[in-house]
Length: 415
Image (cartoon, rainbow, N blue to C red):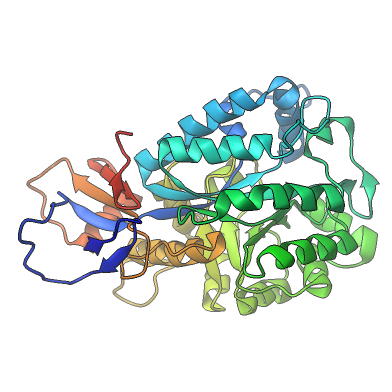
């Protein structure tokens, strides 16, 4: 592998004479893109596991705990948490992150003197850790479908279209000539963004960059689907496709509760389904219909979301094993008879993650960023093919470890 000074691969030659090139001691795989992160929630992970008084704990009760955590979190704290998180991602094999960032304002809901203050803290955390980042400032305006007013605990998140446009325009220069960064947007959800507002903020983004990524939470919870039906007679994904053109720049996060028609629409659009398996399990969201969706030709990526787990191998293990539990079969998501389940899933989420983050990543090939991970077996007398070692990393990880993480051609594991 040969790279340039900017951190891009310019030549990859199989079976070449290595000469005096630096050697990587292990099996080299593409760095895994993490398509969905709320960095501040890393500090909350593991601290919301006590039963509530009603024993009716759910995503919605967890959300109230999360709002409480934000009551005194300042930009310094956000940067510290994000830096630690991004280092943890690198240690486990993620080399890039999609930061779905919605804590824009101070604890009273007032904009900071620099409206991009918290966004820039996340950019600085990524630079300190050495991870690539696609920053996705969140547009959040409403507290429910149809323009229900947001509550006081959501005041740190809120914008109107003009304020959001100013935020994007303020941030745009921070991304010029930065191959390690990309700017997109994240309309939070159709609960928080009315259809006309979605149209407006997409127009703002398109004026800046018509190819920039667009991420959206959708159909994560049955209650969300029911509320959408009650409001407009349509399910969330159905409403989205009736509102705007969904294509390969979109990442639909979770998309857990889908009709067959919605599932097929996502798969046919080229959009990426952003799956956050360990968070979805932690919150009791449900299981994504992965087997039929992949059969439809759908694209997927993985994310650590609330960061109860920061390990791409475990996300992939949950992805396959969840399908085994609901089907009663093994190797459910294998591409074809005889193929490695782990290698196939890794390749899928690298391709989908690259599309979702809008960067040339996720592949060891000329033109891609020099982002890769080195896996090794601590039991050095074990003889494995690379595909078998990847399967062990995902499904039987005892003894398999990440020994180096390279981002932009630079080792980051000990950074």
